[in-house]
Structure formats: C-alpha cells, structure tokens
Figure 1 (cartoon, rainbow over the protein chains, first blue to last red):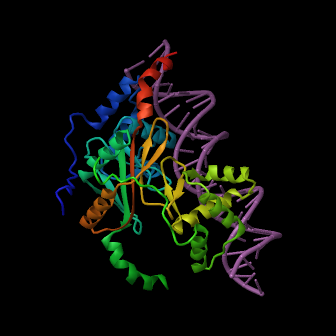
Figure 2 (tube, rainbow over the protein chains, first blue to last red):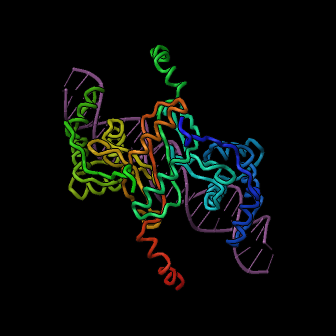
Figure 3 (tube, rainbow over the protein chains, first blue to last red):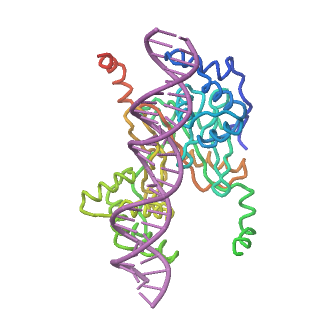
Length: 166
Length: 166
DNA sequence: ATAGCTGCAAATTATTTGCAGTATG
DNA sequence: CATACTGCAAATAATTTGCAGCTAT
C-alpha cells in the first residue's frame, strides 16, 4: 500500500459545535435558530452515518420529535449551504453526511449489498488541482466514487446462486 | 502539466455499431430490437453530448420521431445496462453520455454557468485500483467529479457584482 | 403463435411551495 | 413587534407502472 493511502477517519477537533456553527451561519443571513432547527442539528450530529431525508424524518419521529417533512427538507438545504453537511447523489434520493468536524474523504459503493465505505487518499486532492489548473478551473470541491463489489459479496456471490434458484 | 494529463477524447474505433451492440445485448436476454429502440440508439449516437430524458424526448419530437416518454425512460435504462450509456447524477434529473465507443473520462462542473467539461487522466485509474485493493473491493467503475468555477465565470464574476446591485 | 413492446393515463416517489398561524431576535 | 419559521395540504417534478392492443422473432 502506498503512503497516500492514509484512511484516518477520526472525527476532527473543531473549535465550535455544529449547533454554534449553524447559529453563526444563520445570524449572518439574518435568519433564526428555531427549536426544530436546533433539534435537527443535534440529532444529525448525535451519530455519524449517511442518511436521507426519509430516514431522518423516521428517526426523528421514533425519537419523539415531530418535525414536519417540509422543515426537514428546508433545514437540510440550509445545513448544506452552511457547510455542515455534504450531499451525495448515489441514487435518485439525496443522501447526506457530516462535512463539518469530519475529515475530507471519498466513497466506495458496493453495488451488491449497497454498503458505502469511506476512504481517505491525499493523492486525489493533488490530482484534482492538477486537472483543474490544466483546464483553467478554480476547484471548490470534488466527488470521487468508486463502484464495485466488496469482498463479502464477492465471496458469497456464487454460493448464493443456489438459493436464488429455489 | 504532468504526463498523466492526457485528455485525448477522440472517439474510439469500435468493432460494432452501437445499434449492433444493443441488438446483441437484447438477443442474449431474449428481448427485441424494435423500431422505437432503433430510432433511439441511432438518434443518441448521431451526436456526442450530455443529455437528459426530457431533452431527448424534445429532440426526438423535433426530429419528427414521436416516441413516448415511457419508452424513452425504459430504453435509457436498457442502454445503461447494455453498457452503451453512462448515467451521471449532477442534479436531481439524470443526465446521460456515450460510454461505448468513447474513452473513459471524468468531469469538471462549473457551478456558475453549469457547463460540464470532460477530461482524461490515467492516474485516476491507478488510484481507484489502489484504493479498491486496500479495501478488498473489486472495482467495476468510478465517477470523479470536480466542481468549481471555470475561467470565464471567474473573470466575469466581480465585474458582474455591480449590476447585481441595481 | 407467443413473448415482448408500445403508448396512454394513472400511480409513485422525491421534493417544493403557498398560506395562516406561531415564535425568535 | 417585525420578520422569519412552522406545519399542513396542495403543487410540482421526475420517473415508473398497469393495461389493452401491436409487433418482432
């Protein structure tokens, strides 16, 4: 494995809580940190995982927080603008993940079990900047998604065939 | 510019026409190459550009081909499965581009003018394989999207500010 | 002949919006 | 206390599906 394969995905130490960072963002725009918004940021940052709008609504509901679907959608958009969340478009529904307080990384997507694995590789940034420079672009971000089959699915694929025939 | 910045996006010489390749794919699955499907492949391969379902329906209509929206959607899905088209998810509607007969490449997306530029860089494949190996994945594909601002938009941005204030 | 295909209209899925009442800075 | 926010229901946008008749192998 080369030295560029770092893969350290420990959450970063950040000076402000996500909630504070969101409040600051809203203040600048003359907008308000309301109860539903506070509940949302806290809930989203209470665990580290990928989620979509629907899962979020369900999760909140199960946790006893009745926040309307519209507010969830509206707040997700704000959180992306605020730099707290990153939006992924793996399927036709948008998925989200923490962007603030978490190191830059990219994804491997197993198309069999649908699992998403994060990885970190410094080389990609260099490549991104090299390509951007060559095309007169000022890069502001990137998305690198590798699709394939994870070892588990690769191993269980042929054996599973037998069951599929039942 | 490094030697990995090749950027040769000349269409490839391919042994079979897209139509033949599609027919072969359909035959294997016991499906049929009908008039609407033939019209679609030919139309799609008559120019090289990115397009979405809606644009395609409009283009076809303008060219005098009345193919229903459902058939367009159904056929696009088949063409992706057949390896003729690649699906891109830059926005909430899927965009498509030629995959067969065209060299592997990735994209730069200017978020100001929404232009998409293709580029080729050999290094990415190496990176993709290195990362996949390190995670026990068997890579079957990837998507590398650089978002940023193109030189044209970058130049015209500050001057334009004055007009925005009116 | 016999699957499979088509267009149409209706259904589904994901997301957005208008509005009347409520809460924040 | 002005302005922004919320939930609801209705609207929109993108895509999918059921079905009755049509068509390629």
